[in-house]
Image (tube, rainbow, N blue to C red; front, side, top):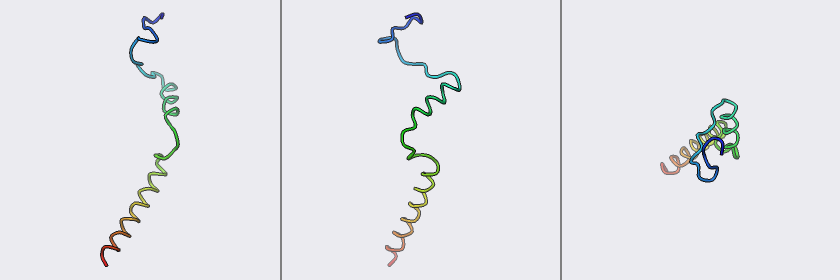
Length: 60
């Protein structure tokens, strides 16, 4: 290879360097949206609601 590395045995990637390349990598890693901030806020709200229910049930 012209960069001195074999594409099969040349070692690990050094990763994206440009802002465009980094954004492309970030978008490629986005799979389903389960962990986006809006969903995390909803899961936190549901968790707090369930904790409150459990607290009330155990308080009987």
